[in-house]
Amino acid sequence: MKGITIKILVDNRTTSQLESEHGLSMLIETPETSILCDMGASDAFLHNATQMGVDFNKIDFAFISHGHSDHTGGLGYLLNNFPDKKIYSSPSIFKEYYFSGRRGYWRAMSTDHSLLHKYPENFIMIEGSGCSPLHGEPHKSNAPQEEGRLSGRWLTPSMAIVSNSCNKWSRPYGNIYLAKQPATEGLNHLTADPAYLVPDNFEHELALAAITDKGLVIISSCSHCGAINIMESCIAFTGEKKISTFVGGLHFIDSPQVETEVETFATELYKIFGHNGNSNEAPLPSPIPRIITGHCTCDKAKEVLAKRIPGIEFFCTGSEIFI
Image 1 (tube, rainbow, N blue to C red):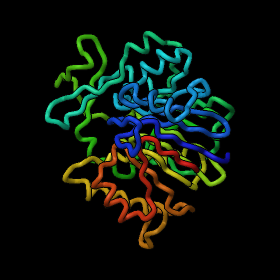
Image 2: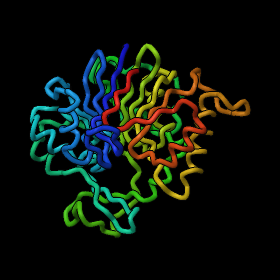
Image 3: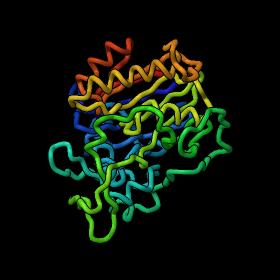
C-alpha cells in the first residue's frame, strides 16, 4: 500500500484558528479506506473537520483507541450526526469505568455507556485475545511472542487493529494515576469506589497498523501500554518487521520522572533497532522509525525527545501528516 495521510482534527495544541482541547482525533486516509480514529473530548473535532474540508460521509468507519473520555467524549456527537457510522472498539470500554487520580482526587473519564444501548448495531467489538481476521487470513508471523496471545483484526488486506501482546519494555510513568472499576450494579461512572478500584492494565487499548511499501505505519493514540511494546505487538501480528512510522501520543506527562522515562524510552528504542552494539537483543532489520507525537506528550518530554531522537516530529490540531 502506498500513500497514507493523517489529519489531526483535534489535539491539545493548535497553531491556527482551529479549536484545541485536551483530547485527540485523527482522520486516516489510505488508498484502501478512510478511518476516523478517536473523537476527542467534545464536538470540537466536528467543527475543525468542517473547516478542514473533511466530508464525514466519505469516512468508512470509526475506531476507538481506548476508553478514556478525552478520546471518546465526541462519540455521541458523531453518532447523533452520522447514525449509520460503524465503530470498532474494545468491549471493555462499556464494561468498565475509568478514573484519574492525578489531581489528588478520582476524576471520572469514562466513555458514555448509554451510547451502546442507544446504537447497539453500530459497534463492532475487538476482543482482547484471540485472532479474528475480517478479510482473509492474518499475515503469518515468525516474530517471537513474549507475553499474551496475538490479538487483533484485519480491516483491509493492509490495515489491522492490534491489541498489545508485549510487556518487555517500559510503560509510561503516568499510568500510576489511572484506575478502573467494573460497571456493575451499585457502581457508577462518576464515583470511584475504593473497594472496587484497581490499577488500569489497559487491556482496552488498541492500535492501528498499516503495511505499506515503506514498512509498518503504526497509529497509537496514547500508548499507555508503552510505545515500544505496541510496536513489537504490531510486528508480531502483521509479520512485517520494518517499521516506517509511528504516530501518536507517548503519555509522557509533566512529572518529576519525565526526563528519566524519556531517556529510558530513547535507550530502549535504540536498543531494539540495533543501535547499541552491546545489546543482547536481536536488532530489527530497520532504522529508527519516523516518530510523530503530540497530545499526551508534555512540553518537557518533547524537549528531551528532540535532543535524544534527532528528527522526531510533533503534531498539533490541523496538522497533516504525509507518509
